[in-house]
Image (cartoon, rainbow, N blue to C red; front, side, top):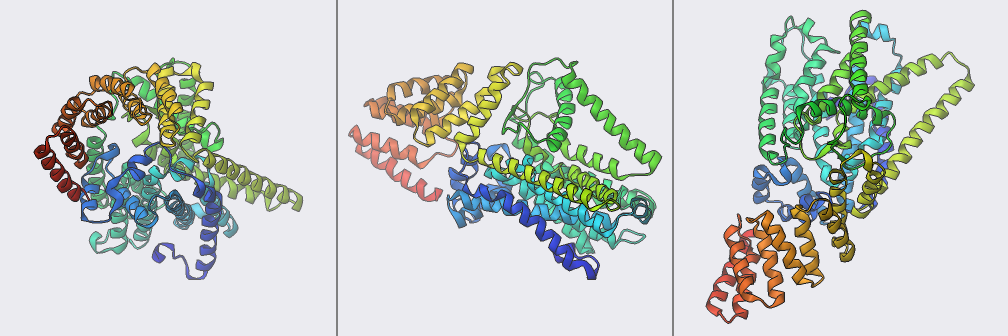
Length: 594
């Protein structure tokens, strides 16, 4: 790691101070997240109901690399949650601490990367930009601090299930930093790749990033952009072929990751009949613009942005983003062609490329966009903000002390404002009730712009789960009933409402919900098991026995408690040989599951 940080020998100490400053500021802003609980949005799948992460052993590793749970393949993320569980068990503060520390390191690395890119600027660019030492400091620290404290990143950091964001970005940044070190050692010809420690470090960092989240599949393209600017290796190495050969291992891993991701998410990929290509393209342009808007003015942030299934594609809502996209692109090209200023175009290309995997052409899930999708792409705009800050400083150094003081106060005010927004939004992620109350309130204000079914089904269901887990069963029933009024075929709402009725000892109502859910999913073993439990409480042992047998028959990996409960029912019915056989089988399965 030291080799990545190292600059010219006389400046290491001051550089480390700036890096630590960035990390400390970020950490202070995110400390309130330590008071947050788990939320009812994938945290159950990833952590508190996930039995696979309870033991760090060979079985965990095998599962992590073969599992498509949560419609994702990210074995390193699973392993990180397992390590957290080994240290913290189910104390959420410990899990939050890991995500916060990773984010602080990422903010530090953004600062470091900015400094490294400044150092690699060609001499003619250094002269044209005339960056003084103070300007370089302002540029680097501004980029890192704003990346660290920006409210748009709260979802990636304060949501434990989004560990994959901070973890994959950590390896993404490391990979680029190692690549820059590798390139600084390249003179004239490309050296033997697999004998170069920096090249290997860059490649393996990329692989670890892909094992954390496939979002970083675009890294090979980003490296090519860096080769163009600021490294200008196309000129120095006399042709693009050698540069492309360097990237072959990276592209191979990217394509492999894409294939695995498509397989993992095949059930979540939306059909073109649901979301036509025309609406996807229009939404992509809109998302490019809205993300930039939220970088500048991070208001109205939500955990879930429902896909707008209504809307005129020729309205200003869609036309203006296309015009903005075209205008920015044209301006960047003009600056590149006419002014020989490549920086703007390079940043714009970075932003577009890193957003491509999640821009919605391949629509995953029901969201239109997500704050977490900007975690990686926002690095470019943060660096641009650093450039503006350094340019402002250059304009002010000739001004009087009062103007400098007022400018300093304005900068501090902006940082304080962003920090306060971040802290406030962290509070919204405190628990499932707080989070989904916020979502419901926001969406109800916009109800006329969305299909009611599309917008409120998700938050009401998740709030119902939160109420259920908190023991507030009556409120949970109301929320599940609201979802079923929106979508009568919501199988998971019937499932959860039936389970809640069962907890309230309202077993006849529970059986009715399980019956309705089984009509929608007749091969769901867990539903048969739950209905059998309700039949037992109602004293209908024969129906319970039939359902337990069906659950055992359908169970992909027959669970020990299926046999355990059927064995107990056999015992209640006086069928002791059958009971003994099932209880023995349950014990064997339980030992194998541990």
